[in-house]
Length: 80
Image (cartoon, rainbow, N blue to C red):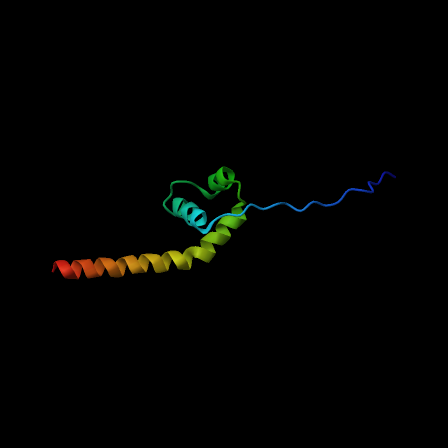
């Protein structure tokens, strides 16, 4: 029997990704510029992480777009 005495399981090191980069990646995917698979290869991030960000940050996107709609309504009312 051959057993390795000093083999330890290494933990995978994760890179820190800024919030702005997460939003830009999600924006590219939602706009159809790139796919989730291509983004995972390009930025060296797992697909599950990207889908998790999309679910988690979808509320943030909705809030930011709703603010944009309110601003657009204000501008249209000012024109009238």
